[in-house]
Length: 389
Ligand SMILES: C[S@@+](CC[C@H](N)C(=O)[O-])C[C@H]1O[C@@H](n2cnc3c(N)ncnc32)[C@H](O)[C@@H]1O
Ligand code: SF4
Image 1 (cartoon, rainbow, N blue to C red):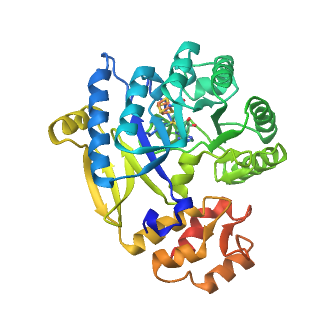
Image 2 (cartoon, rainbow, N blue to C red):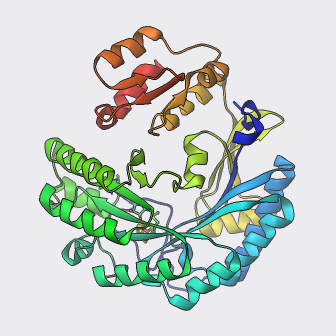
């Protein structure tokens, strides 16, 4: 499937830019983020970002950029002028939509009012803050360097500088009860304007949390407790007008993160920087592209070869169809069954759909979409595996 498979009005093109450094490594996190004690040569990284943007644009040809997302790591450690120059470079090589959404992820530890004003002047129009919890003991346990008050101060600075902002919370934390979570979530909603990302704590392999968990020193809620916490999340957010539009993302209708929708709707996106992933349509065929993860190795690769790419695979029809199910069924809006048919060259087995429908896990709506229900989301992986079989 290519973007061209969609009507023009629905085509989107996102650019993801990865800043791979953090002030400290959180013990639960397995993102491509690194701590460096020596000064980072930001100007040198900036030149490499510009080189990779030029090389990517040479492959895609003309595109209209609808979204840009600075993710990390901690992109709010970048100077506003670096962010501005990257955006200028994107504008030099592609057309930029006049309503472009430009998001920057920020860690409360690195939020300062002047810096945020600088990002806004550089062209950022949305920020996503890693608040994680509004409880000091939990923040400490999560290894965060900020307090709940510092996170709320950062939210206030975001609110002052940006019309659109979001923040992340991690729930299903050790010993967390549904009542405590309900209170914390209500407090969070009173601070959130239009969007919240609410992630269940996941024990990622090879993290310090995985070691503690294996040793029985970190106990997370069991399946029943997690389910109760999930139910509280859905109930409180829906009642407050911020229903889930994706498994872990909640927004007022119309305030969804358009960049993340690019991934879930299987539109086209470029990936710039260490460990960035892309899905690009080159000569009408979809490719899965990834760059070198290690920041300094990526830098040297870009400087010597003009690009940090280490994998560049043409996707088969079957692979694209599976990805379409895997990503699209995360969305409350579900997937368009006609589009699936165009992509896969076959329809999803109607018997499988009926069986999942009779279990109450999916809904086959009259407008030709297939959606996972509230009862189906907690078992999403099994639903996708069944439909993809
Ligand atoms: C890559 S981080 C970037 C945000 C920023 N670096 C920060 O921490 O403030 C994106 C989000 O992923 C979530 N996250 C990372 N690891 C997680 C885990 N193991 N379980 C649940 N959520 C996680 C956190 O909520 C985090 O804010
Ligand atoms: S959660 Fe954010 S700040 Fe912590 S290590 Fe991961 S990317 Fe860095």
